[in-house]
Image 1 (cartoon, rainbow over the protein chains, first blue to last red):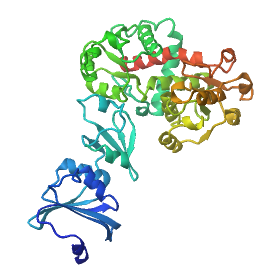
Image 2 (cartoon, one colour):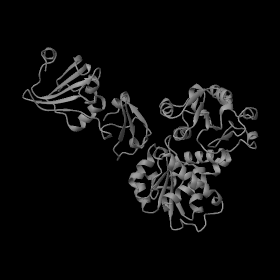
Image 3 (cartoon, rainbow over the protein chains, first blue to last red):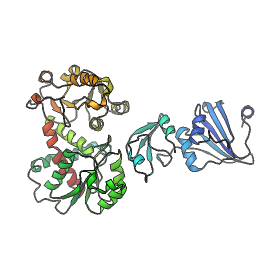
Image 4 (spheres, rainbow over the protein chains, first blue to last red):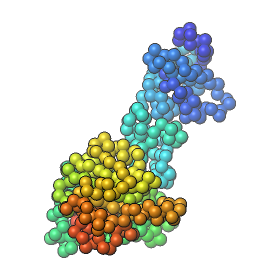
Length: 156
Length: 307
């Protein structure tokens, strides 16, 4: 971490750092992880951080929480290419980049209220990735397409 | 092409070659659609028609098609007659009927219901309409009608008029036609325009023109596909009357069109095509409805015998 960044966000002892979040998406990351309303979690957010790779980016640091694979898939939906660092005792023990899978299953529901995936309780909603930019996914069942805002609103 | 046991769920699952293969076979079926296919090759098959929503035309044409091929038919046409009224899920019903039949024809109010059914059935599932979603056999019979009544689909200028916003027939037919080399015209009032995402997708493949005025484009068209404007889409009856009246097809309008122009309609119609049009050479909507049987005979034969 550069000195400049350290001035903005302190290191965490244990938890998850989500770096290289597309600028403006940090609050969406909090929303889909449902941490906005949980007072038990300490979160540091840096927005409009200068980045060589991206120009500007957002960074989210979550203390005492290690994200599971379902949560990482959710992050990939709105911040593909984000770098995840798992921190223990101030050390990065794992670092990787989240990738959006071509088939997205079980992490969000269809925006179409008349879709069978919403009316028939027993099935897992499933979507196919149509385009990364702009992000567009298609419901496996009703074939409706959804874009970023609808996707964020429907994450489970 | 592998047809045996194939599910017919969405027109998007078909290539142009596959659509043309069904059309070619349907053309051979036309002569048997009112007499029965020689030898009744599906006489050892049972076709289940499960209609969770009433649809006399689609259900009876499937049942007629199955019987003309020799198959026996079972099923229901209303919820009262089924376990659905006892709260059974679709997936459970499909698991059970799977054991009673060789193919399942399904009409259901939920979009994506046929896709779901196809995942629970070992026998092939044919989508006979899922809510505002897909109705692939209707789409194929519409393309068959264009091909049969107007010649090769390639190069045609096809205009859709009426309710282009809610009409699922228009959505899936225009998407399917965009796989051919055609020009598409969408003629509708502002309130009932074709949804943006559908237009965007179609424009990637073929030229599209949108207008409110049918008179402006009538001379360009080889096919005029008319749809019903539904009263319930308008909060104000006066607004409805104003809009519906604009798109009534008159003989004087058709006389300005190409000599070989054909007029289609998925039916039922209300007053967008008055009876005075029925006897004009352009009127092909009753023919179109009659092609439901040979097209469905072709599909049943393909998926149940693989040929």
